[in-house]
Image (cartoon, rainbow, N blue to C red):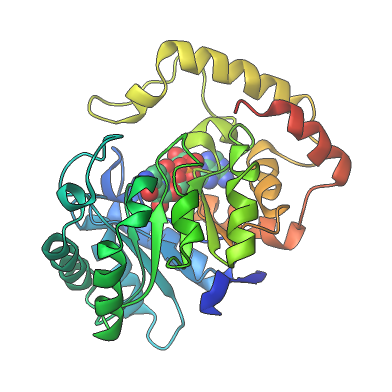
Length: 312
Ligand SMILES: NC(=O)c1ccc[n+]([C@@H]2O[C@H](COP(=O)([O-])OP(=O)(O)OC[C@H]3O[C@@H](n4cnc5c(N)ncnc54)[C@H](OP(=O)(O)O)[C@@H]3O)[C@@H](O)[C@H]2O)c1
């Protein structure tokens, strides 16, 4: 496993981290299987774990707490997220979504779920860039840092809006941003990444497999049990379009490489990324994904071809 500097924090994080949404809330999750997969990742050198209170109302955080207990003395970085008090609509006010008492309450809830005294990285789960000028969030997080409850502060940028955090990065008050970045969604490269580079803000690349399509395992018949949110993400129209794109990608796979490997190595090829956090509930997925670190960046000709496969 290779490690990268996590922005200005100075932490050395595994370039492949761990996304823990699925095991907290998606259907067909199995805690024993998830814990085995998490342990496989630790054994293979993964040291960065991304969870959130809303991933099963603390369930995913609880699994991470269990992993920490099972690995005493190991440096494992914990990243969680504060849910908004109200929906983060375009004209939402900071104080309606993240008032001071709410921030403090949810930091304590996450600490309790994780069973630890200090969370390495606390992120705002949704964001509006207009809040950059209202520094109440930063003052509250500074107080939480001073009191030793958190070490660093990040925002998770809303899906499809990589520009909606740039002003906040420029305030110099952030340690990290988390953003959707994959072969289909390359637009964080346009404006967000250069600003993060300039301000030494760490980048967490999320949803590397486009929620599963870039693993090459979906078909036109793919459907999930009722209540699974992927039914709303992959509407029949979107699924059809996505599968056509996936088929085109399969034709450019370098010899000996499979689609999930190409998807992860595409992200690892970008030095602006501090860590990529695939969701993986199965040990064999964790082992295959973590092996991509040693395989390294993609060949330049593949990278250049992949520029033509971006959807946005
Ligand atoms: N607003 C936010 O802050 C936000 C939103 C979305 C996601 N996230 C974070 O980003 C993380 C990653 O996104 P995601 O989990 O939604 O989606 P993802 O990483 O794009 O895809 C996860 C899916 O890929 C499958 N998979 C993983 N490795 C595979 C392999 N080698 N071969 C075949 N299939 C494989 C997983 O299966 P199994 O699970 O069955 O192994 C799972 O179904 C989340 O877990 C979460 O931590 C944050």
